[in-house]
Amino acid sequence: MKEHISDYFEGILQIRNGNNELLDWIYDKIKADKKAKVTKAKKVTNGADLYITDQHYLQNLGRKIQEHQTGILKVSRRLHTQDKVTSRHVYRVTVLFKAVPFKRGDIATVHGEKVQIVYVDKKAQVKDLKTGAKRFVDLELLKY
Image (cartoon, rainbow, N blue to C red; front, side, top):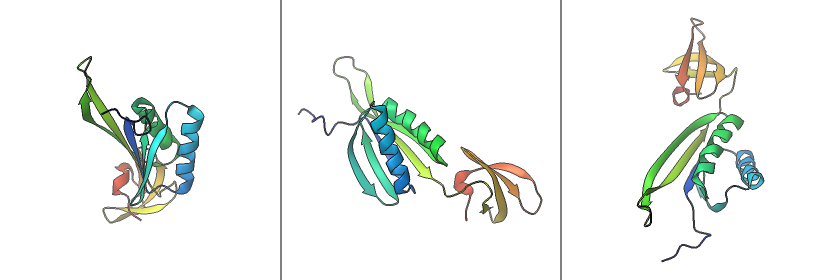
């Protein structure tokens, strides 16, 4: 059975905890770059799933989203099929972006200790409010 071009996708962009502003930015970026299309969009709990036609573009888009907004980026792939002509494995990519509500100067807790956020990127640099010691922690460990 032949796939319709409108159903075709090579990867899924999963946005979690993002706002409408972020989704608008993503759609504008895809439209401006003209390298891939969104074939389907689904609303899910805490976000949206966008089905994208080009997996390499999708991975680059994930990095651009992380540069645009603070968050956690995870890329995974799973075997989809095997090419009949070349016998090469064909994968589908999933890019997960979880926006985090933290920014520089915010007060949060890590393992029950109050810390101030000094810097946020792939990890957060935090300053312990009691000791003044600075350290890097995973974004998932920060709590309001």
